[in-house]
Amino acid sequence: MKKFIVCVMSLVLSGCFFSTKNSSFYVLESQQPAEVLNVKTSLAIENIRLPDYLQKPQIVLQKSDSPELKISEFNRWASDLEDMVQNTLIEDLEAIAPKADIKPLAYGIKTRYVIKINIEKMSGYFKEEAVLKGTYYILASSGQLLKQSDFELKTDCGKNYADYVMAQSTLVAQLAEQLIKALPRGV
Image (cartoon, rainbow, N blue to C red; front, side, top):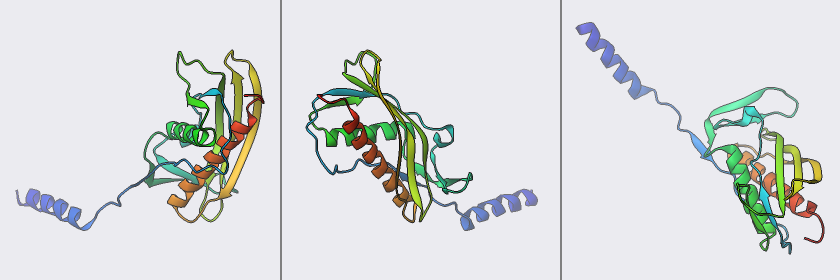
């Protein structure tokens, strides 16, 4: 019985002296556009696809010259990253083109254009560049492909996780600007 009490007391006391680090949670934020465009159209954003290694709550960093990933246990996304990228992109598009009707793609939505985005790389490392790379597709409501383009956007990553998240927010805003400008003329 004494051994049991000693074991319990040692476990209780060890809990008092050792604590785990608290996690920090981050969200992408829409950015103020450099210019507002007079675009009157309707478009829907299909669910954005990210690589499997990014589909986790932990923030993943990668140096530009290394295949190694740094997965932070204590710095996490506040919600699903694919959904957050899509929602932030829609907010950025709405800020750039306030007269356009922009929403997530859902069954039954009538829209003039559908935009599909496959992100191949969403990376960066402290004191290096943050990168957002992939391909977007602009389709007519009939499904006809109107435009396909690769993109690779870069900006300074900063020196901590908050800076990295803000850098990625900036890159999503730059993508939104590219998408609006890529819509067929006469919209």
